[in-house]
Length: 423
Image (cartoon, rainbow, N blue to C red; front, side, top):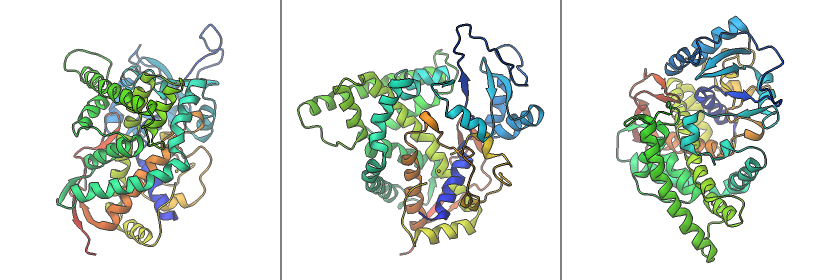
């Protein structure tokens, strides 16, 4: 792949990584107390701490500008606070990234909000540690390594072309964000997992995702309560699918050896993982590939619309070369002048220059490196390729605001006007 499209995708991921990487230290001595001094900062009120300010700035898509940067200016790159009831140390910078991400399972253990754990499942890979984590990651990586991706590429290409022909060729106005959410959902289920569900299944998964970062309060009508109900529905669907798949495979008619779902069921037959672990990890994979990829695509097209010169370079690049591979950073380093000059300026060419290690990590690093990072990049690149080369398009709401709740999304779904290019 040439530099222009790598740079553009890097910029899209640069814009879309809007959540802080929160890592909670686990003290190895029995007392649970630290012998060292905590960094400077404000803990705020008991339990509440600075949670309100954190959420307010996040909702306005100004988490770095309004919450992190003022505290870096006041306290330095490492500071303490209290978020969602937990004393928290927030770190910024490539060296801090290197320390925490390379010490997973040694000095630190990553942690997720209670609602996320309950809805994704306690048996998902995000909750596993040590040997169990390595076992699950090994099974998942089998389908997401170079050989597995080589099989996936033509399937993804076919899915994207079929979806565009069916949904874009007959309409002038498209909600880009919602359209790509439906497409990425289809790609994960059909191309990666080899599963087929009824059309309404996307809405059921969406209800689960709405509650992932909500307060874990189960009163009737709450986001979390609706999400738990949807999660139970998904579990029943997946139990049926898992057991049917196991029966076929044990009778010698399973097929689809390259499919991730087949690899997971094979692991269950060998006794390496349980039925619950398959279900929880399928739900997690759908979640991990869903909103983040859709938003990265939406931001790519927003930037292309606002910078026609970059669109022209990309179109020239795509029509004269083939598609191949590509790059992540935690939120703090994206906006750090030390690593990126004028970080808020759209400049895809900044990624043509070497980037310091651990300064750009949209998919993490170390043992928790996102297993599906190459799949996400392929989804984005293939979609961009077909849309840019086959359609004329323009934004219908150029000044649309980006909202975060807690993941970023375009407030109106990024509606665009589309028409087929002449041959």
